[in-house]
Length: 145
Image (cartoon, rainbow, N blue to C red):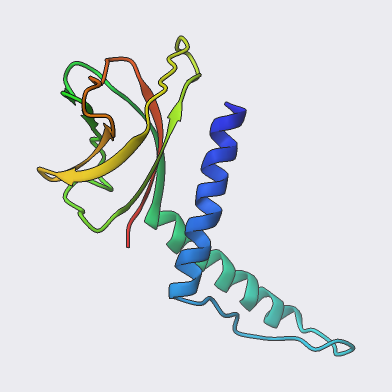
């Protein structure tokens, strides 16, 4: 759980920095050292920050994906999520979750990647000679552009 949280936090920070670079956030009021700050101006800034955080929250979702017999094909497994389905421009970040909460350990040594096909994002083993087994879990961060 700790590793999962750290990985998703790092990915979220990276995504936020990329998103922030694309659309810079500014506050309605700036303050200079030694000057009085009005409560209304500070509240405006907090309101703007809260609005921006809600906007970013609507653009990102973090899930744990588990491979099952129903979502596996050869060396890949497809993610079924309303944020990424039908969205080929989504940013999809994936890491292996070897110790998911409430499940047994499932360790995979193989390098993974993601691709988009048939309206869904899929996680695949780069070594195409390896078959994706059922029961492998992945941390997935999906960002809508």
